[in-house]
Image (cartoon, rainbow, N blue to C red):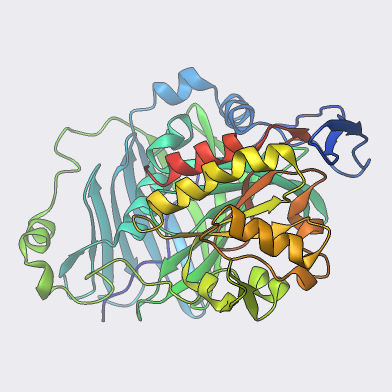
Length: 436
């Protein structure tokens, strides 16, 4: 039986300690005029992602050191339950790598590899298979020593979303939306700036996505940079421990990452001959927006007053929540843009828009939906406040467009670091994310 290997090398991440003063949060009154209101003292101002990455590079060696890094050869001892073994990973900047994994007292062996573009998996029988797009992207980024200098190779958009406790210490939480698959999450210690945890979803042997959580400790220098020497991976498969035994900075021969004979045969096979999960991208239908659906309740409502099951969101990875009202002048100017965007693109990409009304009466909300021919559903008027959506996502003014990922985390909002930037910027970022 083939395995999608759960073991990979440390991600080279960190985060700066950035302190910024609180700023006033605009609140839109009827008519759209913003008025400054204080931010709660316990609401931190999030650092920019660029600052996060720049500070990481400096804390772990500096940009010059990373740019001069030609490759890494790392050797790990690994264990899971009563099994243990050895793993070697050779990698160079750009995403090319070779991984070989063996088990003590057994002939078992599995591998992974990439020439920088194509990624393949080798099972215990010595047969290779093209990696699914989700896995391919994750592996190339994980093994690329300079991935965080060139994050746009792997991630469409990223944002520092919150400040949360991890093991009793404050951490910044970074959300990254990759080109393939569901969002990735990274947690960085506010004081040390080092990565403590990384979470993502990958396909298991059955083809269903499983959540993987990695913990990183014991950061030490390897040549001109620092990497985590101890990694602990948690998933439904168990807890895998990795301990760095030896690491060398080196330059590899040009052909070191050429596609193997086994891999060439795998990519030459017709797609129809491949078996899951290699056949297609892993389906995640029905697994999205569990919290959002619970908050909304069992139904949404359309412009004709008909009920629509909120479960439709479970099959949609990206949702735009639109907080609006007909009495709001800026809302009336932005709504036609959002309606046009939906009408032109809903059939091309998998996303949904949900309206959350701030109208004063149910009849006013219904009329607003009809007058502007909104083709997307709305939260029932009776649920707009009791649902908790406004408290969690709504901030203090409208129009407010909030982009949430499949795990119901905010990716972009009309409020940026406490300042109202408006819905157009969110829509532009979402359009770019969707490739529209």
